[in-house]
Image (cartoon, rainbow over all chains, first blue to last red):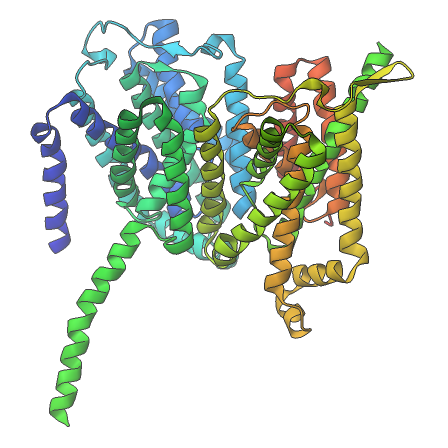
Length: 331
Length: 287
């Protein structure tokens, strides 16, 4: 009950944000936070809940981005048609590469996903149809509202918010379903889960495909907002890294972890970029790197896990005191 | 035609020897601690920049640059072990991957920030000129890099198999607790392994800097090359890394020459995935 109340307050704050902070920079910042929160939440399904640390999620991000842009550039279709196409591509690719890759455990899985992502980037860079190294552009002048091309960031903000809520709802539903229990068992010990009859390979593949489809939506939305996609912005390894870091900073395997991570890192990056200009690009990633090293070293559970722990401690303390008091009264 | 082909293969072998050198560092740490260093390629990149700085500041060639890069990187390796690896080793998988990945970003973009994203290179005639052996032209810089890398990799293998230190390290790799009961300190052995592994990358970096392009993101590509080499040679095997390194050098040169330069990375990455998927234990690993 209490939890639902907090959620409603948070939701109200998020809805009110662009109405309170009305400058274009602030609204754009808000939209970007939500966009990365979608991508990081999608990653969380396979990276957080299933414990398979994918460093190649940009492949699915790129699927969505290129499908949405390709639909416009080659067939003059609205991204509303490109987005489902992107989801289908992403899920198919996830099914094909997931089968052999998910058999690998730990580091091996991470390395394989890096190689897949780099391979995809190289192939697209050499494919004329997908714009090669130059990239694809979206509509310069939108024909109608279905082109999802707006000057203001406000429509994007609410569009992204709706998609984020859907993503989180799917994640929440998944964690409370049979699949969620299987995933937790697999994360704790795949061998034990298997020996108890959990269909580990199939469940991991489902999680991977679900995560891929949602990530592709984030990619398509990104492409729509920026109106342009090239191999670096659509398939660069740094996108994977950003998604992963946001989820890990906030708390991998926690429902709102990725959102918290995005709400911290996206403003950090945007502000440092606007303050430092061109020189800032390198420095931003230095800071990113330092943050990840520190999380890994001191707080692998992420910020939300830390807050939860402190919260639990504060609640436990008064109880201990009262028990101690009762004990002293008794004696 | 045949002369060119032979020249391409020789060039591939020489480059492959350098691949083998830095990959043997990765495989050593991997086999011993089951920790993957995602910053391994960036260590090589640092070695290249040390060589570059030595040249621009002191005007020195690899004779000064290589030992200095080896020493500096070995020190960095030990620092990284005590500051980061020792703690994340016991942590969850996510922490291990994030830790070294974060380190990679930190190193890569510090260099990026300091030196900029421009491609740098050392003067071509820094090491001798070009040899002509039976009509096959070989750059002296590549020959030097290949031969030194080959010798050091072999030396590393001998160190591991023929000395007390090597036996101690292998004992820790086999079973750290048992080794500790025998009076070997796993902590120091693992720190030494990190020093050796990072030192090897420093040397390799300084060696290829004489003929390779130098750019902050080169570590990304070289890191993947190291992963490919280690997965091909079998995780933890230095002789495996040597054979695989030479093989990959040749495959890369040949595919660059026969299909086109842009496709050589595609070939190598595909090979890597193929091995991970179908023969994860590598060419020489145990089944």
